[in-house]
Structure formats: structure tokens, C-alpha cells
Image 1 (spheres, helix red, strand yellow):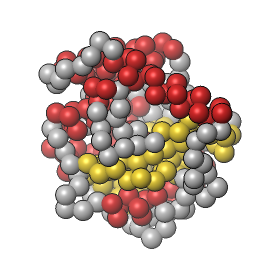
Image 2: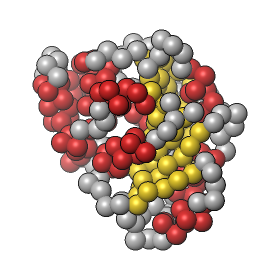
Image 3: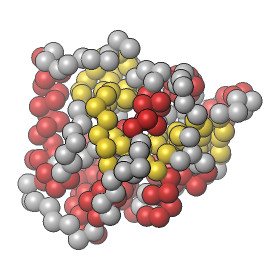
Image 4: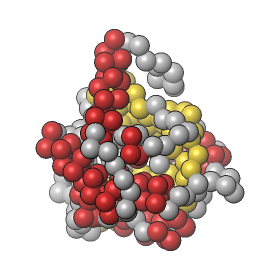
Length: 258
């Protein structure tokens, strides 16, 4: 079984579509958990209206931010595989969860895939494409897209969840630790999984981008891993190229109409 977790706070404007996206998944056993930081916008009443759904449960408690909520979700999870879907993001189609589960075998601890960054006001308008690769190289600026990163629950139990001291880039530290330090066994699933609205915790503004890069250096140091002084260039240049390609209409728009 797969557990899908959504951290949430005042998400009444978007969570219905996210919930519908999860519940549309076919041919797979799953549970969906929303971890809410005590919303004040009637979100909780909405969750309560869904509570009769046996695949859904929610938990409401004040938290220390999105990564704290994610850690709480991991502790609540009962699925063999755990992943996250942001409160305003969507699965590309109805077979995403099925394909995630099918990708796991005895030699796989985690999988990752591709995603679309889309406009916050129009999920059909692609702003940037994140195309994965079987070859991960954190120190040269390339790592999995965290919304596509699904991990065996036992890995979290063994190596821990998100380090809250990393603030806007705790997802990077987690993947760096698991992939580069611990060397879990990963598999690249070459398919588009997520429509991710622009403006997340680490990409929402310049201040957070700069803070994120500082925390990334901190993560490398914490785990005794070397990193080039040119890391920000390695990390940001591919993003700039992707944005230019999207504006010129040069990207492959496969799966966009699914």
C-alpha cells in the first residue's frame, strides 16, 4: 500500500482539487493523510465532510511548518511506500500511484520521476519542465524533484525524516542524506507525475532562494560531502535554460493532455 501525505494550512481554495486528484487514482491500494496546522479558513470542516471515506484521514495540530507536518504524516503512515503531494498540486493522471507502486521491487528503496511546474492560476499552463535522469549528481546541482520522491517507510524509520533546522530546504537535506550519504537504492521512473504550482516553500521568492542555497551548503557540510563554490551556477543554470525552452515552446509536452 502507498501513503500519500499533504501538509496543509488555510488551503480551502485548492485542497478540493488536490483531494479529488488523489481519490481518482486507480488500481492501487492507498491511504491519503492531510496534516493540518490548525487552519482558520474552514478547511477543517471540509476534511470532516470527507471523513467517511475509508481511504482518507486527517490530523489537526499546531506545527512548526511544512516539514514538521510532513514528519507527523510519516509517523501516521501505514503504507509500505510514502510520498507527499502539496496542498495545491495535482497528479498528472489516474495511474500515477499505480505506476509508483509497480516501480518498487526488492532492489528499490525509493523512486523519483518528472514533473511540470505550472502557473498558480492555471494548472494547464506549463512554466517549466523538470525532467529527471537515472544519474543523480547533487554536487553538480542535480537532484530528484522532491514531490516525485517516494520512499519505503522503513527507510524513514531507520534514517529519520526531515531536519527542521534546514528550514526552506529540508527536502534537499533529506534526499542528500538518503542518496549521497546513506546510499539508498533509487530508481528513476521516466514519466510525468505531478503538476506543481509555482511559489513553493523554497522557490516562492528571492529571499527563500538565497536562504535555500545557504542551507544547501550547510547540508553538504553536515554530511561531510564536498561541494564546489560554483554550486549555485550548477543549480540555477539548468532552471534558467528550462524556463527559456518553455517560453520558446521547445519542450516535449507529453502527458499534458492526460
